[in-house]
Image (cartoon, rainbow, N blue to C red; front, top):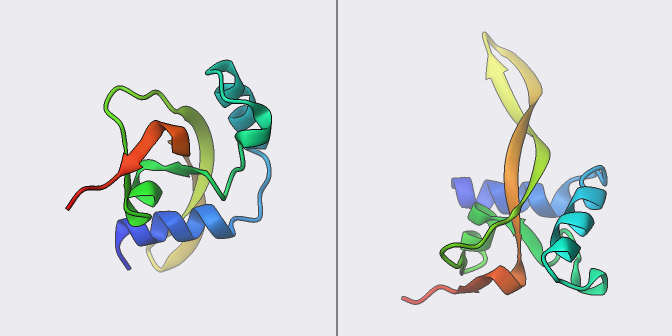
Length: 97
């Protein structure tokens, strides 16, 4: 599984809603109406957007969130927090081939 595929899968299947307040606040402060902000539908990480054949436009500033990623050390599996940045669809453009 590629890094981009994994990022999209985590973004669309996560069970947590804990980042929603940060996402809504962050993007409404950037002028995006709250009703147009739909995490797991039009708010994703850079790599998830790449998997969807889109890229974040140069200079765009996203919103920082905390995500949990699977890890393994010495045969023991666990989840660890990681800070990442998400972007709204209005901050992206279609990838050109």
